[in-house]
Length: 421
Image (cartoon, rainbow, N blue to C red):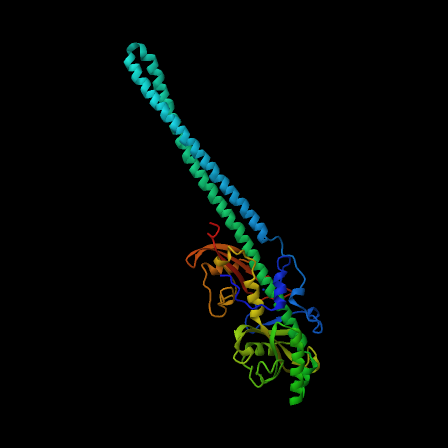
């Protein structure tokens, strides 16, 4: 369920606050994958970009909370009108039946008086018989009207219920798409950062002249970079043997001397053809980085003279503070207070592993949803399925990708279908 157990950073807070008026349009990078982007698209490292400063990119018509609330209010009014009309018809039918009963009693009395009058009351008896037939016909019409009213009212109510769920599901799909767009657009910038910083002269010098003084200076330089970027835990430099020789926050994270040789991000960087490409390791906990916090690591080779096609000297890795971004985004999904207790927003990888979650189950749960493969094939849409003990709206959005970068992750918002009742 949605909750407030997140500890957002101010930079990401600004991003979330701006979400109502903007959307990022950032799609399958597996662990250790190599991704290529044109070098001309990489921002300068001397101009740190805040995630809040990313330009808005239109993603089409979306329902805001207020718009959806207005539509829901209208549907509720129509539903109320339906019940009002149904009630009025029931009352009218009841009155007709009362009048009809009185007519039957009058007809019965007329028959008695006609028989008592004998031959002279025969004509009056014919009128009484016709009155009785008319009363029976009226009763039949009233019965049909009552039955038809019940069926029509039930159909109207079911149609309104379905329409209301569809509108709510559409809004949830929009919110799911916005969440993954925020994440992908931000992670695209991380891939830009690592490629620029791998060309820094301090990293090149530390790997070409491996002295304690060079390592210390590189760490100091990385610390200056980290002071300008609140989204990273650390930046590390490794030699070709995978040994960490410098990091930007040595007092906080004592990782120098640790081996990163067997990590996916280190091996992925070494597999790249030149400095315009980068390696990546998906969400994980590292025993030697960031004190075991959940991290993403982007990596790039450090090359001779900082040239994109220079000889490989080592690897630079940026250790991204995943929770500060993803948890803040999902926990601040704009859901009304009435919906929050019945709603869960999360980010999943292709295997269903929870990467971000309002229920705080990241990396400890693998969701198995009804018809999950079918749902994941939908770029943006929803299914109505029984899950977790009740019927749920499963709203899904697949990362659409941004500037050639794609995570391949899935954004989900799961909400009980009957909360409107």
